[in-house]
Image (cartoon, rainbow, N blue to C red; front, side, top):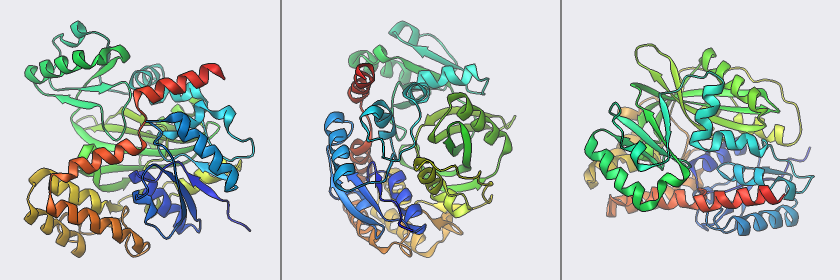
Length: 412
């Protein structure tokens, strides 16, 4: 039986790179959209072609036009949004060919989870635990006295951008001046109390509100931008039930992921963020949950059975993020070399961890960008921050792009 031709919405993000691996190990070959000809996803034996396009955040119209052209000329069967392009495709749903397989929730459902304020309102309505939260729309409200520390979140952000931790009044005042200068209050800012606990993430795939697959992991070591260096898979029926309730309330169709803090004392999961897309599915794959495969089946209109929980205790690593973490924290070549040795020998903090981002044994082409990043970090350790910023810019949606999506929706 012929495998469906799959097009991923971008190839620069960690989520795209891991989706490529999960789909490739299941026997698929994929094609990519990318504004970067040397994106991370290009270097894989599972990728048959990379199509150049404008960045979706910089030119939403140009990006969509190129996707539609590729779908037509390459006879694509499945369009798989692996990052914020899911929001874009939902807004442009009526412009997508009717034969194209893609799993997208309704635009109004996206609106409830894509923005920080909308998510806070949704969680409150469904009685899902979240930290004390307040939306501020003016400088006076932001300057009010409140318990420290607290977090400030922009209306829209990706890969942990647009999030600031305020630990004292001096930091608050500095942010206030910055927000006033950038007119950030126009879209609203979320002020949220800090919760002491461990960060955990849950990923799911839904078929018209029915939970098809779900996976949960705990962040063991934090990396650049709040991402993960080490993850540990866990099983939690309470969290799975909450995710199932949210997906049913939204009649969600496709991938949906959440971040929450497991409070140290009460062990209550306080939900803090949502990602209406597929997020880094390899910890799930290695634990026995095939999120990417479930998303393909739902996209094709199939009704897949509900997958069982995966195995708890599966430790995975993102070696590339570990290197950038070492460069960011210590800014010394000797420490980066030490980190390379630890990764190569699977020792130190990486002992017992399986590689999920740069799987050299199963996909040796990934050695090329890995070697390039190593060389750049050894030459200039501070390059870690610039690498993260330029990568996020390749796939994130800007506020201007979000406004463009709303214009599409209103004219549809």
